[in-house]
Length: 102
Image 1 (cartoon, rainbow, N blue to C red):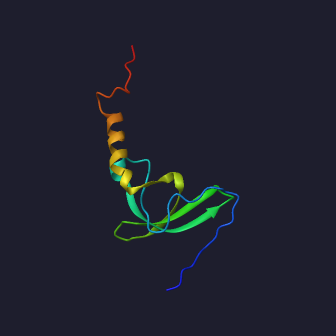
Image 2: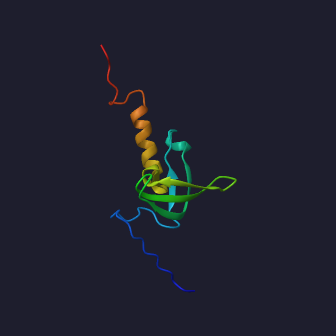
Image 3: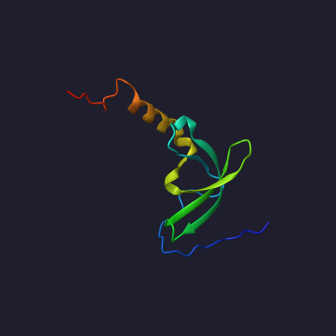
């Protein structure tokens, strides 16, 4: 099998954070335990609408469809437990982050 190398030319100096096959979670407005996961199956650069890398993610859902997301909407799948713990520690009733109003 032959290796194919693809070069991107762009004004964006950063390399993509994720590559083909990486497992990611799509952060959403819902709680972390509800985030959907998937595998990166495509990359593209957008320099007009929202500059930066866009990732096509094959979602782990029964219908297995793919969606495009920007880098800030994704986190590595392995970080989900840490982010869930942070989320719930901030929202727990006895959390130090809560302030009383008098």
